[in-house]
Length: 445
Image 1 (cartoon, rainbow, N blue to C red):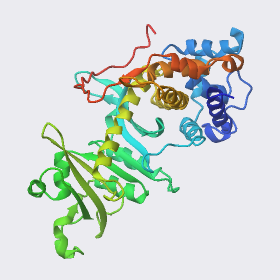
Image 2 (image 1 turned 180 degrees about the vertical axis):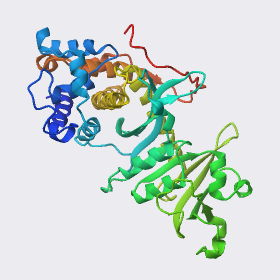
Image 3 (image 1 turned 90 degrees about the vertical axis):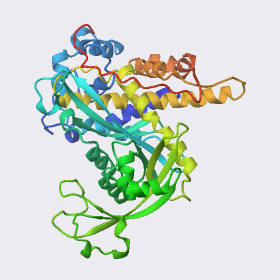
Image 4 (image 1 turned 180 degrees about the horizontal axis):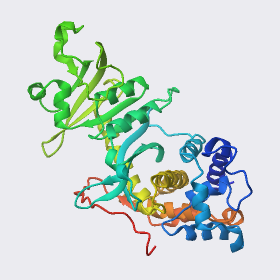
């Protein structure tokens, strides 16, 4: 059994271990009758969906099994079956599939990047998803946890666009991380840090590395004057005392009043009741990195200098960009923004399906990358090359739609290696050109 067959078998096994009794909205009622599309086929059809129409996905899926047209379900029947799945069905497939593979580490840590991206869709009226403005749209906001070394999605929070709250999302993701002895390092950008996040990460046994804006760095270290006194390129450790009242005479550490931080009553904090007195201590390390252009970037972590020195922190934070490129492949190459539905519930299902497909493809692509590195070590090239991820993802998606007989005869890793390589040119950077894209129309697919 080659790598592609093994990975495909693990995906099928993840779905086979699930039952309609556990993951349908009406256990004992839904998925009990003998229909053209059962529980397993519903899940697989959603995972293998493309940018085209629902009928195109059905035709491709059933043509592989050499079924006659009258044996395939109609688009309406498939949509009705998808509506019977519970909200936990696809997240559970993702979790069970991931658990069958070992994760890679960097300096002993599983690196989990957290970031968010918006997805627009054509909707029936959904007030929570409606965003006003010159370019009004319906949308959801995806906040994902991404394993940077294994290049897979681990977990996600999907929120209505109007109600998006990245502070809350990252805390929910922290709470869902099991304290199973695995050393995890959660990496996030400037939109995520908060005292609630720091406390939740410590409570979950998770380390963190986040970038702070200058304003946030000032509030953490104790004001702009103290930040100016520290100067550039500093690395300090603090013990902050968090309180929800301003009665300084009742503070427990009277000799350390400068390190008290007040949390307003309307600010979310899960560990202190605004109506009661009390305080919580958190240890935090602030690192200032001076860039070549003279500007400063601020990093916050709960790891001490002996565990991760400053130079390693820089290298780790640079790796965070992997989640940004994964969103591009997820949305454009695998078609996560080409939705087939209008209702928010089905939109969420499709996003989870695309993340499962992405993980399946990247598991195979990682093996192809390792094989490529072993071959190129024997040659002298001007640049270091990496795989063409877009072509790799397309090849793996097409592989899922092949019959078992054809899959055995297909050298998928060979086809991935056949695709053009991309040279890695260090030191190159380009100004980002953010382009707002509306919902993809159902017409002309």
